[in-house]
Length: 206
Image (cartoon, rainbow, N blue to C red; front, top):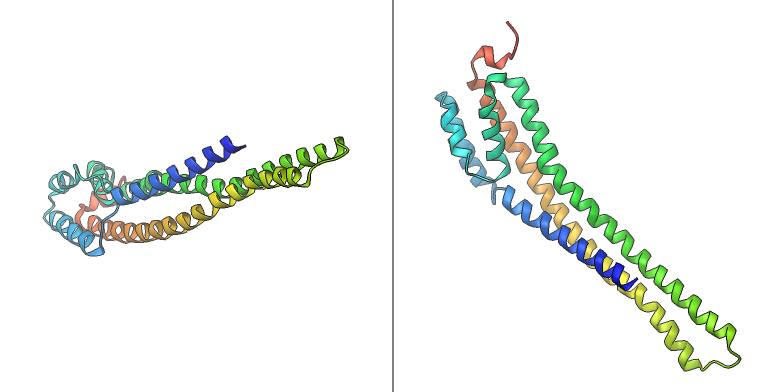
């Protein structure tokens, strides 16, 4: 039980760290920096410099530049297919991965106290079994066994509470990232719709 609690705690901490790092890698630090990036992209789109806009984003690992690069690479499909493509990729590849890891953190928060309670129940069963099998049991020894049984519950709570605080913090950070990303993506798609030729905007329409 102690080993399981250690694994649950380590996995929860690992998932929190990974989500925090991925958000830091994928987001713009400020709304102003994202606006500056979009200003540059809009300038290229206004000049119909689609390849240049894609090249601007190619080496940038952040989510919005990668989505812009994807849109530029697939612009011949038309505006609506490109809009659906980048929206799905943002939801599935960027946000979906982060939310899956946060779900693991939520499970760790739930499992840690349950493991602690399970350990306590097992320990109490052993203590009372000893009490039933022996005619005389030292109160100090019995108290020590019960105290040891309660340790697993304490460990479970000590694991769950910090993870709850960390999960709340990461959820707030993820919410800011999602809101900023959606605003940036909407602004880019509007500029792309204006910049694409009519036949590309309409897709396969004659």
